[in-house]
Length: 209
Ligand code: 3PG
Image (cartoon, rainbow, N blue to C red):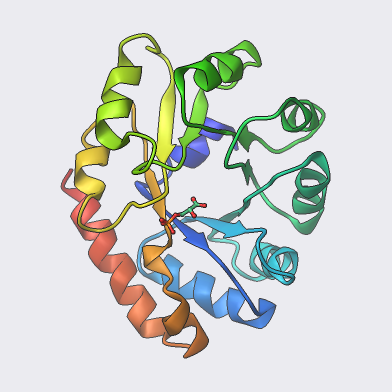
């Protein structure tokens, strides 16, 4: 899948912090059951790569990718674990080069006009806007729409069920990402049904936008 297909597959991407790889499969299944397809596992825990591996093998309905990809080595490890895409919080040349030599797309993060221009210079036009709320939110994305006509964003960072509508209404936003879909306390307590409910509620709310 190309970056566009990934960001266009659904309107909400859960950003997940998985502490224990054995939770990854039931968590992914709970989200898929709630109507979510694309999942981002952040490389912020020791077991994140294991979680990606489990999901890619056991939950074929999901499109699992790696988030918090900070280096070319992270990128390589994520691909080896079975990630279908890589998302980074920012843009670096090392990451851009790593993605050019790889089979899976990179969705780099940007937070300024200069960074969008740098990403465009390297051929990336499907970008993460991070940290969305802190970096100017909806107003910033509306301003980006003027100069950057063919650039599409997945804002993440501070997005919630309450504020996602304002983002999803924008023509240059394909989807939003956030951690509200997989709250840590529900994962720790293995409250999979509650996670399915959050996903269903979020997907239903996004469907009307
Ligand atoms: C990310 O990496 O995209 C963010 O940490 C998600 O931010 P949130 O926790 O505010 O949803």
